[in-house]
Image (cartoon, rainbow over all chains, first blue to last red; front, top):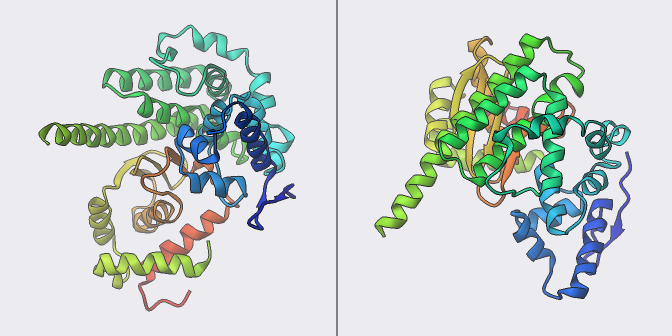
Amino acid sequence: MTKAKTKTRGGSELTEFGRWIDRRIKELQVQDPTFTRERLASLAGISRQHLWRGMKGGAEFTVFEVAQLARNLRLNPDSAHEAYWKGRDPKWTAMSLGRRLREIGGFAEHLYGHPALSLPSDPLGGNVRESMYSYNAAALPRELQISATEFRLEAMRRGADDRELTFIDSVLSSPEAIFRQSGFRGQDLTPDQQQSELEGVIAMLRAWLDRHIQRRDATAGGGKRE
Amino acid sequence: MKREAIDGVIAQLRMRYPELNAPLTWSTLSAILAREGVGVIRVPLIHDAQVISCDGVSIIALNSHGNQRRYTYYAAHEWGHIKLHFREADEIVYHTSACWPDDPREDDAEYFATSLLMGPSSMI
């Protein structure tokens, strides 16, 4: 697979996605000269080193990170996904995430009727959220959607904050998390195996949430004592 | 990652945890993971193990139906992902399910796990 790259001043090269980001930063700088790569990294919640390495193809961005970058560049997230994955992986090239999201977008309507999917705030931006949920909907049989939604409700009841919910969503919704097991690794799972896989993922997320909430509360408690 | 870089990470871990200067055992690994704040759970999975990590909180899941004799190796492999591929504080989301079977990060984690299992005198 080849990656289109462009030379930068330091001699390193930008990937197609890197050029896409770079070009957009320059466009935004016309209106706001303070909009730099560092500021984009900060807004997207990633380190500037990771952003720079990712733009040069030396680091991988997650689905979530690509979405966050697109949101903060004020661009269509689907285009961002296409720009990022185009040329990176034959599986994605043949059936890009953006195209798949549009193909299966009809599933979102079903999911949007569920109150659990009304986020207290919208850290990803509506378009991405819709896309991710629609992906999730297509990836999971209805019984599994219910299990995933119930866990999300459980997390909300336990006081998960936006950041924690975003991580949970990214794991439950991303194609790598669950759908990959049957779609991308060539393993056709039985419904029982799918259920088992999802329960395993949810058990991991539950353990992660326990620890993350504990640590968050401990940090908050420590701050009060000071 | 280059082997030298992985060796460097392992060398640092051996300085922090001298018990890693012997071939790795389950009791050693579980004690170290507990000290590192890495959670280990056993749940039914369709594969051997997996890991998620976000905000420096990592959870390794081992297949409860899997071969328990292989738990040390599986957990060491997933720990390899944490030490080699996840940074602890400066990013939001990680989960290694993004790794494909032919992902070079899998090779990194294999090398990491094998080195620890065989101990510092190993020649891999």
